[in-house]
Image (cartoon, rainbow, N blue to C red; front, side, top):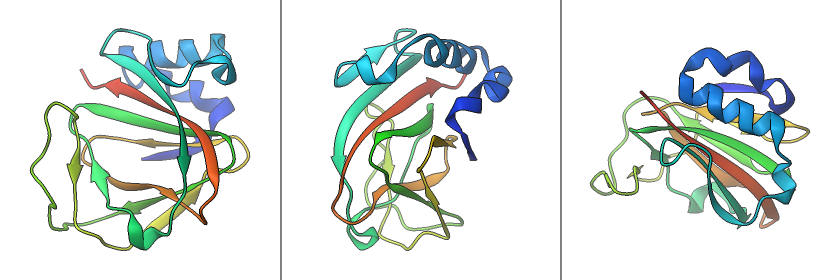
Length: 149
């Protein structure tokens, strides 16, 4: 995982060609002007989901991970915390290849990152994370999905 200033994400553009394509999109577009929902950047290889969420108590959110995509979480209005879980925890359901998500049984995060003030969190495949932690507040966010090659 990488926790960094969103305005400095270009430092990481050489992670992969798809990541570079994502960074180029971020640098040349206003995220606030994107419509809610999915916007394709490079077909299914790179896209962004812009969404409105309501944060919730950490005890009410299940950890998740992915196998095919890197997630880049950035809050546009409001803020959330995202928890990271290290180590092995019990799977809650079978991995969904269609949705690229593995859900896990509840566990408290080992560390939490606050996405205030232009920060973002980059979660790589297999990293268990808990997005949307907070006190029932509304958040407008983007979650970029970057396929690993």
